[in-house]
Structure formats: C-alpha cells, structure tokens
Picture 1 (cartoon, rainbow, N blue to C red):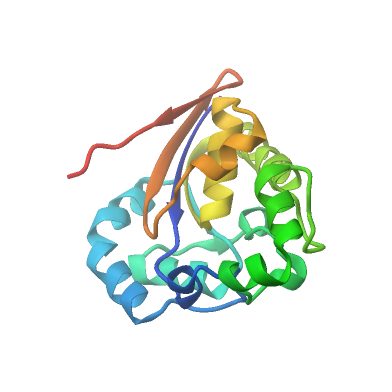
Picture 2: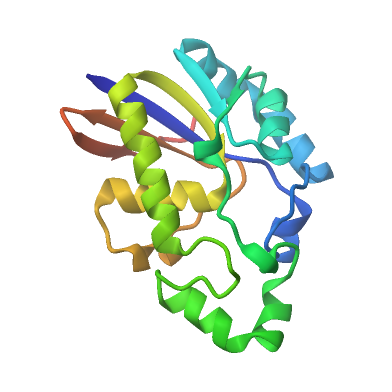
Length: 191
C-alpha cells in the first residue's frame, strides 16, 4: 500500500518571531497574510487528497482554514510538549536554566522542562507515520516545525541528534511517500 503525505508547517506566530516555546497561540498578523497569499499553492493538494489533517493547536487550525483546506484535527500532529518552558523565550532560558538548555540541545533523551524529549517526539511521530502508512492514500498534514523535523529524522533514518540541524519555516512543506515499508522524502521545486 502506498501513502503520500504532504506535511505543511503552520503560518507565522508571535512565538516564532520571539524564539519562544509557544503556548496555544493563533497566527500573528504576518502569518494570517502569509497563509492567505499561499492558499492557491496548497488548495489543489488538499483537494486531491483523500484526507486533510491538522494539529489540534489554534495556529494549525487557522492555517488549514486560511489555506482553504477542510482538515480534521489529529492528536498525532500536536506540537512537542515543552512542559514548564511553554511561553518562555530561548534567551530567557539560556540565562535562567543554562544546564537545562544545554541538555535539551545536546541529549535527545533529555526533557529538563518536564515535557517530551526529542527522542520521545521522534518516536511519537514515527508511530503516527506508520499508522498513516497502514491506512494508505493521500494526506495533507498541517502541523508544527518540531513534528516536521521529527518526521524527517524518522524517514531518513538519521540519529535523533540530527533533529536540531533541520529547519522548518512557516508554510514550508515536505512530501513523504511510503511504499512497501520504505519511506522516501521528496523535495519540491518552487513554482
């Protein structure tokens, strides 16, 4: 069975601009405009898909709506749980919890914030991908940068430390295909 997944990163938010771990926030003004301007690029993908899914956060739901994609929320696409760091900036945490930040950025098993470790996130996303593989079909999945990075780590079979070497900008997307238990990543040409 073949599955094709287009993973789309949600639009711009205040937390992304501030380099902060987000709360359940909506798109900022720039993100709303960005999504509206890009709607024509993603609506055809959504129309051809057997399903469209999005993370349960407000920013993912607003991105789906702004792109004109009717998406069902899927808990498997939720953002990384950053525990008590949610709402805090990286700059603040480097001052207040430098050991925790170092552990978080260097040890995929560390969760100094009390939430999910990178290792746990990659495992959760891998399980979600495998469940989609079993279901087959085409899927547009609107989600978070961390979820997309975790998916890429899984699909490429890289060590979890590679998570921090992958950027997922607002509205960037990656195409993943699985057939016969083998995943492939496709880079798309700009149009």
